[in-house]
Amino acid sequence: MPTQDKQQTKQNWKQIAKQFEAVVGKKGVVQRKEELLVYECDGLASYRQRPALVILPRNTEQVSEAVKICHNLNIPWLPRGAGTGLSGGALPIEDCVLIVTSLMQKILKIDLENQQVVVQPGIINNWVTQAVSGAGFYYAPDPSSQIICSIGGNIAENSGGVHCLKYGVTTNHVLGLKIVTPEGSIIDIGGQIPEMPGYDLTGLFVGSEGTLGIATEITLRILKSPESVCVLLAGFPSIETTGQTVSDIISAGIIPGGMEIMDNFSINAVEDVVKTGLYPRNAAAILLVELDGSQLEVDVNKQRVKEICEMNQAIEITTANEPEKRIKLWKGRKAAFAAAGNISKNYYVQDGVIPRTKMAYVLGEIETISHKYGYRIANVFHAGDGNLHPLVLYDDSVEGDLERVEEIGGEILKLCVEVGGSLSGEHGIGSDKKCYMPLMFNETDLETMQWVRSVFNPKGLANPEKIFPMPRTCGESANVKKVKQFEGVEVF
Image 1 (cartoon, one colour):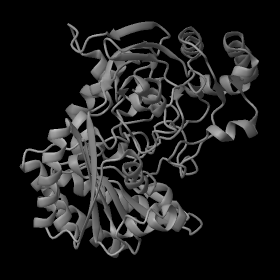
Image 2 (image 1 turned 180 degrees about the vertical axis):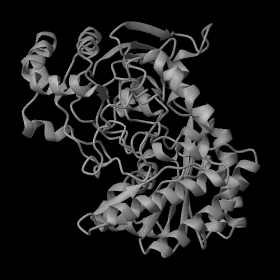
Image 3 (image 1 turned 30 degrees about the vertical axis):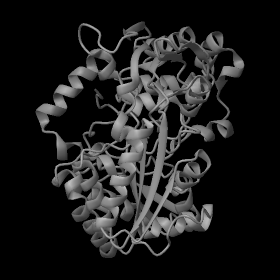
């Protein structure tokens, strides 16, 4: 936004708020400074900026009218769901409007015959499964934060989860979308069948991190619950043997519903908090494997997986078929991030992706990085698809700690790309990783992406300053205490 427009907008926020109140009502506009504090960051809490206003719409039409106001007044705006994102994707910028979908929590349609549901973006991920589980169905994408993260946020970041190895990430389960474009128009993309003619605009929109518009109705694919499910937990004497077991299971032609690895540091952290009594504290790492399908298929694969684990020197193997014990085995993995918070004041997490064959090497290099900088790093990750989640533990009250752990995060991301991996598996690029995009993409690649973005977002008002590197040096953090909005610079 030009400097003159920004200054004029600053002086007129009360008048602007009245325009939004005419759309969503007085209770739908948050403007008191102390109330706005709630929205100044997402799950990447080290980066903070208070928005000018927060808008709480309840339906597509209200979202559309709110976006039109922003478009007409040249006000930058950002969509936000539950605020659980970990890459600063919902981080406000100076003098922006935050459009929050937390009140849009309706299930609009359940069609079991065609195995689909239509929901608003504010509905919590786990609620979708709860709504259809009684009829024998479930929604597959299951981020660790599934009890609090929203479907709209999952759409924005193309979230994955434990079961993405076999069933895919969010984009594999989205059939269609009703979206509000950055100009305020309402359009439908995709449909009620998996393959629609024409350009795959649904695939383009999922994972666009709010830069192409905001989804207001989402048609999701649901799956029939499997006949049988079994979870195995195996402890190993080294991280190398754990990683080799993952490769051996896949090489044997077995595709589990999910495979997760936790290192010794994480094992003891979760046992201290969750106290399952099932995680072997003396193991260098554990592997959680979930098998699902027909009863015969699960029984055969369970035996084969046990044999592969034993071949790789597993020191302890626990299996669970009954739901209560399966939940208990998964409880520690689901609580891993919370457990890290119990042993450290702060942690900084990344989610780079690597080829499975490079797992042992990369984990060894992460350990070397940990010793180099003197910071503990816990490893908890989706082993089946190589999606790492290293948690760097630090104390933000120590001057310079945040900058050092950001440097560590950068080294880990560079390492992932060097071995043929990616910057993100499910957390998105947001503010946190945009400076590393040139590691994966050349100038032509990045320019092409921005041309696509500008088709949907010609004024650059929808979630500006995200995904792509900005003109200033990438060494600067997204922390607004150090970086102000780039005045007078055109943002694509």
